[in-house]
Image 1 (cartoon, rainbow, N blue to C red):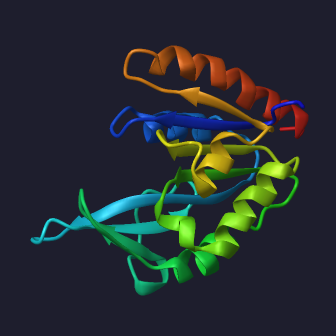
Image 2 (spheres, rainbow, N blue to C red; image 1 turned 180 degrees about the horizontal axis):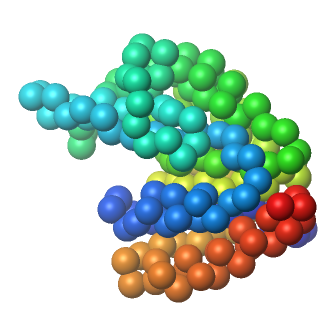
Length: 180
């Protein structure tokens, strides 16, 4: 089966989001989807994580886009935000691409969100996504990592620039295919 989607994987601080944003900037078609970001680190060591429209790295932080809080050991997740805002942001049309930064373990309890991600991966609208590396055989994230239409790329600090050049050619082919 032809691989139609790009999945950028890597360890924490490997440059996944940096590479994702550079590729997103080269897209000349409409972009649907989401970006996530840590917007606040509290005194108790927890990071507040929020969801925004794709390509937007910050903005208004409210209960409607607050995905959860985590530290290095524990997390609190609000699956209803994935199932409402996340699904809404992935309401894509065939004239563009779906961008997802980043897929991880927080959304595994958000059934509607996970189903929408997998539905998009089954489809023909191009997907550009990032995901945490590790344990790809497990659950939702494993299904994303191993999806037959996904071409998986591991990014490291050493290969990031070469990977950008390689994936830029794919983005340019998407631009051409969509008449942009």
